[in-house]
Length: 251
Ligand SMILES: Cc1cc2nc3c(=O)[nH]c(=O)nc-3n(C[C@H](O)[C@H](O)[C@H](O)COP(=O)(O)O)c2cc1C
Image 1 (cartoon, rainbow, N blue to C red):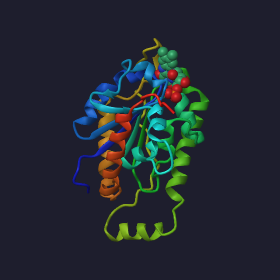
Image 2 (cartoon, rainbow, N blue to C red; image 1 turned 60 degrees about the horizontal axis):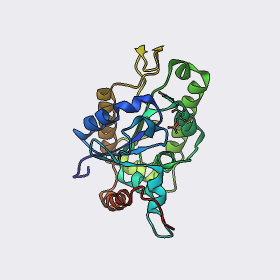
Image 3 (cartoon, rainbow, N blue to C red; image 1 turned 90 degrees about the vertical axis):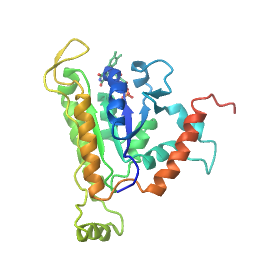
Image 4 (cartoon, rainbow, N blue to C red; image 1 turned 45 degrees about the vertical axis):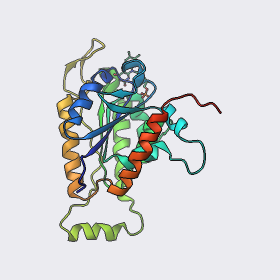
């Protein structure tokens, strides 16, 4: 169990539910260190020019390219992955859900998700938020099934030596993490911001915060929180990348 506070990376995608981002960050900050990562569409719902949300550094696609100039430079999506004990994507748009299910990685947040250490058991939670028709569309159900199946496949295709690691876990009385990453379900019937009434609204902030906390507690029991040394290195890289910010490149 690391001696530091848990670390949550909050991914934000282009749903109107991003208006709850600061409230969610504050709820998470009551028990974890938080950093945020937003897609370009999510920015439309965040305060203009925001570089942080409730004090939590906000990383954008532009930071990824500003931080990397050549071989040997840190790669931001890897540094974020190494830093975080848990990835919470809230809200998760229909578009990003489909991309996750299809394995696309065309931006910082999806690269973090794609490069995620699935076998190590670090949890990923997603909280979909979308219009009722979008949520009930057969393509959404298909994307959710595909995302779960993909996660399960990742969790089960073990690297060489992983069987030994699992046996060691069992010998130590710990449970190997094999379950697919869960999703925080959208609220049951709800009045949506678009005026429709039905399924599709993002889960309550308190529900997401406790789901994240519980998932981290389970993963810590299985000994899968980010290694302290690795996480400390990532911290330094992230502070440098954030300071460089989205400053336009001059080369
Ligand atoms: C005002 C407005 C509200 C939107 N709200 C949602 C939403 O709640 N859920 C959703 O899936 N898409 C929503 N969209 C559509 C997404 O923003 C759009 O699909 C976008 O491409 C998502 O990009 P991303 O997944 O890369 O963040 C909304 C669009 C607009 C203009």
